[in-house]
Length: 395
Image (cartoon, rainbow, N blue to C red; front, side, top):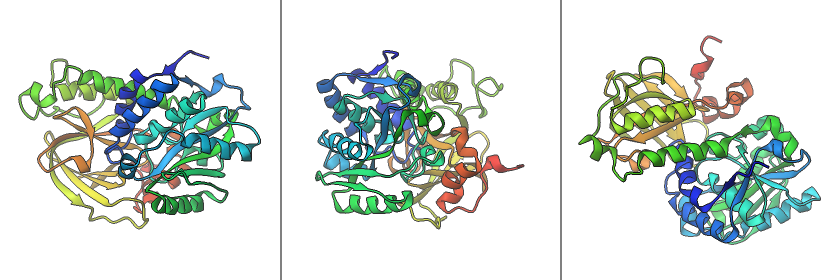
C-alpha cells in the first residue's frame, strides 16, 4: 500500500473539489455533508486511499453513492450506519464480505459518501469512479459501459428501510427513484458489485485524488480570506482571450485573482475557458428535452466581455450544453462548470442572479465517454437533444 489516506483535515478540500466536478448544478447545498464526514472521520480515523492495482484482483468491491434530493438529505441526514446495511445485503449475494469501496462518482455529495462508507466499514477506498463528473442517473457510468451489472442494487432510506433489487439497470433506476421519493427523499445505494480486477477497464482511475487536488487549489486561491471582488476593486477584469496555458492566449502573471485561478484550474484539469462575463439572462429553459430527468430544466446566458458573444447554457439537473451565438461549442459528457469571479467559488444557476460575473469552463470527459457507446449513454442525445457532440464533427 502507498500509505495515502483521507483525514479530517482533507475534508474541506474534498468538498471544494466535489463542487468543481458537480457541473455547477448538482453541487448546490452540500456543505452539510462536509461537517457530517468530519464527524465520522474523527470517530473512525483516516480512510486508506488505494489504487485498484494495489489490491488483490479477486477482492470483492462495490460502488457507493446517494440518489435523490440533497435538500432532503440536509434536513434528514444519514446516521452513518447505512453502509453497514448495504455491505450486509451485498455480502449475502456475493457470498463473501466486501473488501473495498469505490465511488459511484467523485463529485457533488457522492464524493463524500464513499469515504464515509469506507470509514464506517473499516475498508480501503479505491481511487477511481464511474463518471468523472455528475450524471443524473446511476446507470450513466463507465461501469455500465464496461458491462458490469448495476444490480443487485442495495438501498437504504432515510428511515432505515433496506431493500435489495435484482433487475436491469434502467428499471432498477426507476424503481429506486420511486422508493426515494416515498421514503424520505433520498437513498444511499450500494451497486455494481464486482471484483477489483474488473475495474482496470471499467473505472476512471485517480478520480478521488483529482478532486482533492482541485479542491486544494481552489482553497489556496481563497486562503487569504479575500474575494476576487475585494482584490480587484470591483467585478474584476475580463481575460483578453480565452484558451489554454501555453497557447499564447493565456494572461501573464500579475492579473486578476480569477484569471490566475482559471490558469491553475486549466493546468490541473485540462479545462478550456469558453468565455466569461456578465449573466444577462436566467430562468426556465426554452429548450425542453424529450427525456425526463430529475429536476427542472434551466437556461442562462453569459455575455462574453472579450468577444461580445452570448453564451447560452442549458441545464437539466447538471449543465448539459453551451452554445455561443447559437452554435454548439461544448456538451455532455464533457463537464461544464461556472466560476464566480466575486467569490472564487464554483457556482450554479441557483446561486446566481442577473448581473453576476462568471467564467464558463469545459473539462474534457474521460476518453471512454467519447466512444460511440459512451456518447449514446452520456452525450446530448441521452438528454433528449438531437445534436451531434462537437467532437463528432468531421468524423
